[in-house]
Image (cartoon, rainbow, N blue to C red; front, side):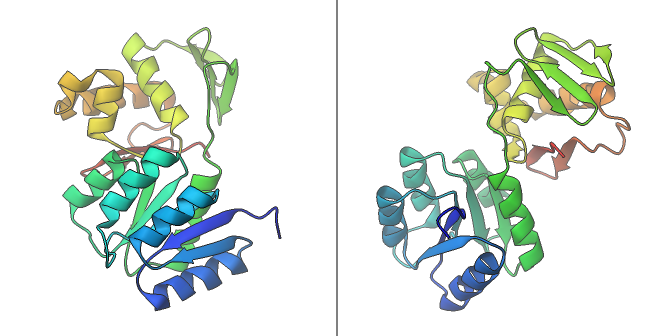
Length: 228
């Protein structure tokens, strides 16, 4: 139906494309497919999609180059689906603008969960007066935060870090992306900054900082902020 989200899948394996189509259509999505990077880029140029599932191992060009071209044209959420499980490649894909990643072989239930997460990811703006996330209330204009109605005192850096997480809720953020966004490009390698300040932020907004439910660690990569 026209109102259903349209998802583009880019993969050179016919079996994977078929599996993705059957799984996604069964769960209420419309699906378009591309078997090469060139075809995928052309589809992005000519149609609007709610989300893209992109394989990195394509026959005509590297999936990372496809991702870069997509990001020049659109901010559409992109989930990387790949056999490449190396930490460096995953981090590069996230730094290039991917919203999430899943390694092959994958479970369809997990794929659907990642799709739902990307599609419902809120796009907050500075104009929004107040945002509620569980017990947390954030007033961006006034730079005020409360937990269960009790004011929480954050430093300027902690507030900027929280704002970055909220604006990218559900997305895996690499240490490099966080550092460059909050501290600036000169601090892109200072990963201890994120660990220390995330630790402080967790103590102030998490019910149990040692078992966080809002700011989750993506081991070796960075963090993911969960709205729900």
